[in-house]
Length: 295
Ligand code: NAD
Image 1 (spheres, rainbow, N blue to C red):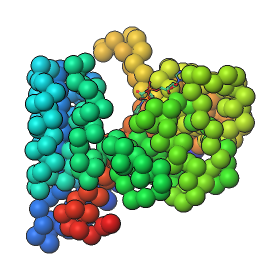
Image 2 (image 1 turned 90 degrees about the vertical axis):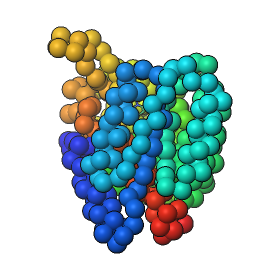
Image 3 (image 1 turned 30 degrees about the horizontal axis):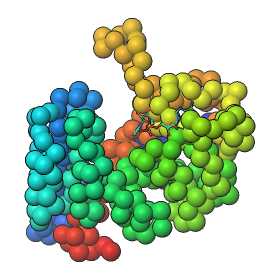
C-alpha cells in the first residue's frame, strides 16, 4: 500500500510555483495577483480564505481580500465583480461559497469573467474542460489529476468509479478521468444518491474517487484487493479533543488501507492539493493574460 501524500506533493508544487514567480519578478514583472471575496462570517469560509491568502504569501503572489458584510446586496456584489473583471492588475479572483441566501450564487458565478475564473466554476470554463480545451480546471479535480500523474498511479484502461456528482468535484472528476490525455483514459462510472446497489460498482472498481460527504462511508467489504482510493470527503465529527471535533474523510481508512494499492489520507491528501491548484490556476492566468505566454 502506498500513501498518496498530498502534504509533501503540494509543498513541492508550491516550491516550484515560488521559483517561477521569483524568476518573473526578477525579470521586472509585477507579481501574480489573486483576490478573494468573502461575504459574511461563516467560520469555515473565513478559515478557507485565510489559508488561501497565506498560500499566496508563501509563493510570492500579491493577494487582496474583499471582506463584505452579510447584508451586501446582490447588486453591490455584482458591481464589485465587474470592477475586478476590469482590473488589469488582477490575474484572477474567487468568490468564497456559500453566499448568503438572498444572493443568487449561479448569477454571481456567471458574472465572473472566464479569463479570471481561477476556481473554474464558470460554465464557459466547465464546457472547455469537458471538451479537453485549455481552461481553468476546478481546484479539487485538478489536484486529484495532478496527484495521479505525479505519483504515476495507473489509470489507463482502469475502471474508475466516482461517487458523487457535484459540479465542483464528482461531475468534473468523471469527465477528466474519461479523457484520453492527461494521465487518465479510464473507463468511468459515476454513482450518486440515486444509484442502486452501489457495492456492485465499487467492488468492480480499480479506482474509487469518494466525494459524497458521508463520514467513513466506504468500507473494506465494498472494495476489491489492489484498489486505488481517492478520498475527497471532509466531514466534521464530534471528538474528545480541545476543539470538540475532528475532520474525517468519506472512506473508512483503517479498514480499507490494507486492501489498497494507493490511498489518500484525510487530512493530508486531496485537501492540500486543492489549495496548491488554486495557486497553479492563478499562475496560469498570469502567464496567459499578463505575460501573454500561454494560450
Ligand atoms: P455535494 O453535497 O455537493 O455532493 C455530494 C454528492 O454525493 C451528490 O452528488 C450525491 O448524489 C452523492 N451522494 C450523497 N450520498 C450518497 C450515497 N449514499 N451514495 C452515493 N452517492 C451519494 O458535495 P461536494 O461539494 O461534492 O463535496 C463532497 C465531499 O467532499 C464533502 O465532504 C466536501 O466537504 C468534500 N470536499 C473536499 C474538498 C477538498 O479539497 N478535499 C473540496 C470540495 C469538497
